Image 1 (cartoon, rainbow, N blue to C red):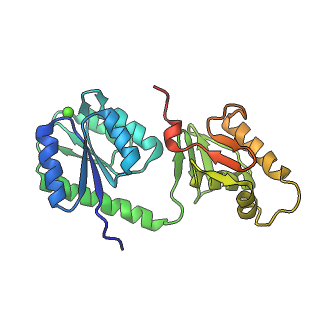
Image 2 (cartoon, rainbow, N blue to C red):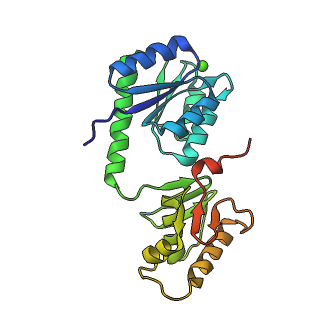
Image 3 (cartoon, rainbow, N blue to C red):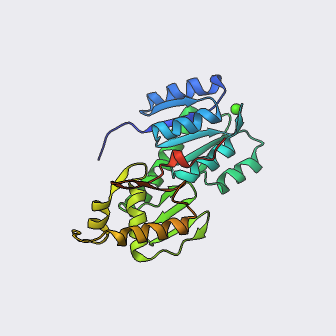
Length: 240
Ligand code: CA
């Protein structure tokens, strides 16, 4: 059991709300960081990897619903919407986009802290149920190691057993290079003395199924002479 402070990203542009809320959450034992815009929310979520996101829906540079949608592309972080009383339609859309819960303004910091603890308990219970095999999301690519299935933009990818294993290993290490030796050792469970053509054939096939080109790949990069690298989540954000 770890006693590190749980981190809360407070996405709220109104300082009269965010400042006292962040202070109150600090007193409740959380480490709170405020993001006053949608852009700051996405940047800080990537940097801090918070345990919970509190999300105002009316932000100066966009809708919190878009922030919610973006976060869900790569993350299962619990999201608690901060909504105004009349926002029922937005609440419904937010929940459909993957937000976990909402609190209605005006709220007390104590109420918010209680709701944060509730979503954290739920999230902890889910991750404890399958500790080794959380789903992996990278851009439009999703891998479910427990079911050994993968989808791209919601469409199932027909991967062979070894192809799935290669993709899974690369996805677990997304953003960093995995050496050819390690792939051969862990996927083929052998030290390799012969040609590594088998690996290249598998990589070419995965790349084809991902719709990637070898020259300008979106997902699967060849690091010449070393191995392969799958794009990190932040490389896969849509171009502005
Ligand atoms: Ca607002």
